[in-house]
Length: 118
Image (cartoon, rainbow, N blue to C red; front, side, top):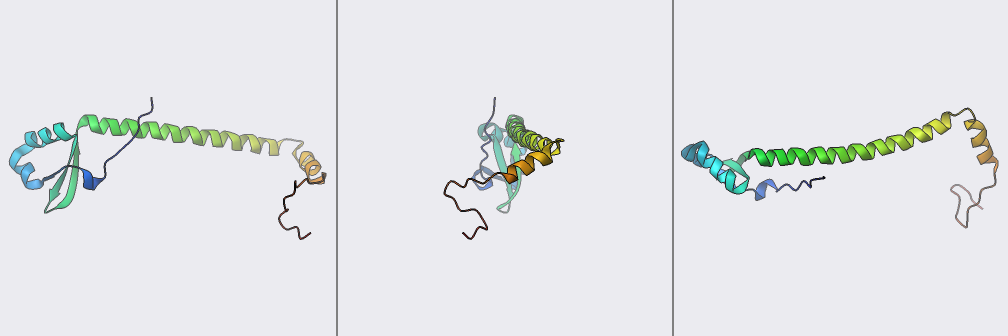
């Protein structure tokens, strides 16, 4: 099952100033995270840190793993196609097949052949 990875922009995340973190303590921060899933800690309005719930962090890791697997699968497919084409060029009869292909008249089907001035 593929998970979609939709991450909020840093600017769109809920914020809490570092002074509130100090004042409310860890329990206060965790209450905010329980409500919102994540929170940005600011210091003098500058973004300093993002605190995520363990569930949110796990969700992100799973989505990234899924995305990586999809990309790896696509890369494996391309690698397999390349290897098949390379193998055909390395076959014993490759040079004869290429010469036979080049010796045949070219059918352009009304298209201009690059470099042809006729």
